[in-house]
Length: 132
Image 1 (tube, rainbow, N blue to C red):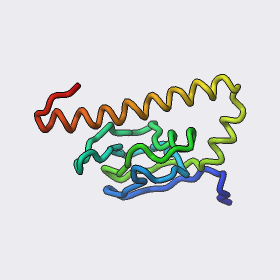
Image 2 (tube, one colour; image 1 turned 135 degrees about the vertical axis):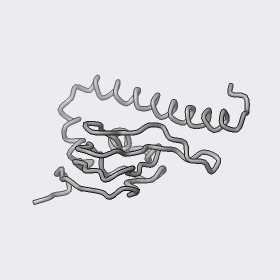
Image 3 (cartoon, rainbow, N blue to C red; image 1 turned 30 degrees about the vertical axis):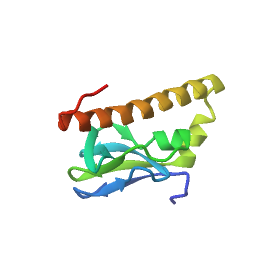
């Protein structure tokens, strides 16, 4: 039986949007097979931050720091994922010492900032503008 705190396996066809930048995060994904593109939209342009393949995890940041999704994700080919509900992840984090949770929170803040700066820089470089 799937409860809101359980994990479950899903198979997605190529081209399936899994989530969009700015949405609340309710699930994280672990790729069993396939390929997922993670991207931001900057000045109307799609800027790929990375691709996630077998064994990779994505979508976890919004669950951990309870902030909106910093990027969007779409399957590039048929992809199977283990989908982990937010509550299940929180249950596991509650077992970690408080110091670990504080460090994790700081790291996620830095990653969010760097992701935004990277996407902006890629758009400026593609347009031939100076990057500061």
